[in-house]
Image (cartoon, rainbow, N blue to C red):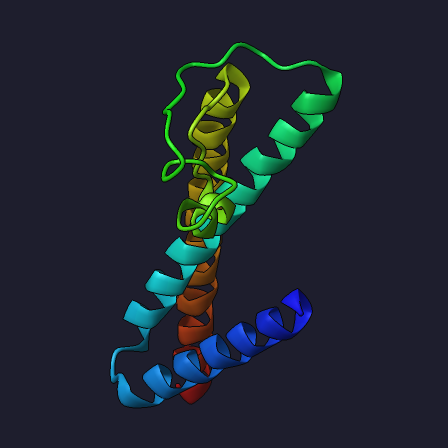
Length: 132
């Protein structure tokens, strides 16, 4: 059942992104939004994976713990944001992994942006040189 729900959500999100890209004139805004969502999801999944390894090998101390069923990462509605890195009881490892991964993600995007910009300038110069 969860596979079918996941497939339907994926199809809906894909159709929504396609429809928005057809409406927007400035597609860069959609790209930036999707990069932020994807980067945020990767940070959450990375820290979640590190925490799973931590549970097997021995947990570091908890920084704090928020009590209450509403705030539990295993119950609705907060379980919906768990893939994005939410936890009601972060450990020290979690608190270190999240910002470190965020820095890595941002640095890689900056490096990629600079390389693409440099390649575009080089191609533009080659086109101008070919016309002359």
